[in-house]
Length: 222
Image (cartoon, rainbow, N blue to C red; front, side):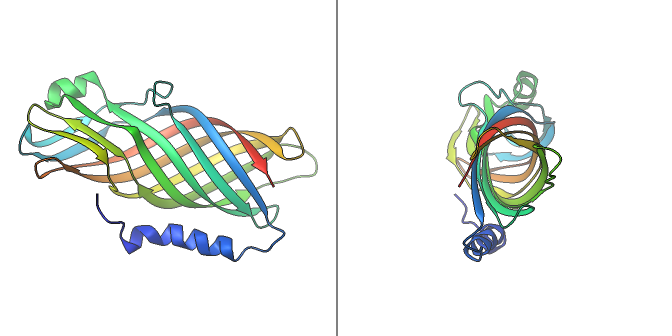
């Protein structure tokens, strides 16, 4: 597993320092969500010296959001006031190379399915109004990808977690309170991760993956 560079660690460290500086009256919200996640095609390149050799192809990805392990995420947000918040988000996305990609590439397995984990430090902006109970919000942040790399060819098998590179996320949604401390929300969430994975036997695999998801979740404030 690669060491996280100072560049990748900086966004998360910055969020931690921001949280430490929050006033005592700030509100904390813990959220959990699931949903339907997809991923468009991406270029996959590298070398597998004990298997398919050098490779460079376009992969089609399946999300399979509701198959085990399912797609999910959790986040914590420290709201400084009614508008501005800082938080940390862990997103358990996943991608499977489709059957056509496996047939043409020579790989027997090519997937990040336990999962394509994205950890980010984020800034959120709410748009409250006294005239309505529901509240729109947007957010974005940066961090790292920590996928479970599951790649198998005729000559080698790579199976394990790796820190593969930087990642960003963006989100837009609407929340609605249904009790004093509880709310539900619906949102669109996207991620972009740059993944450079080590393959067993000295090989390398590189691919930049975008995910798009429609989420439903619940939040608890205290």
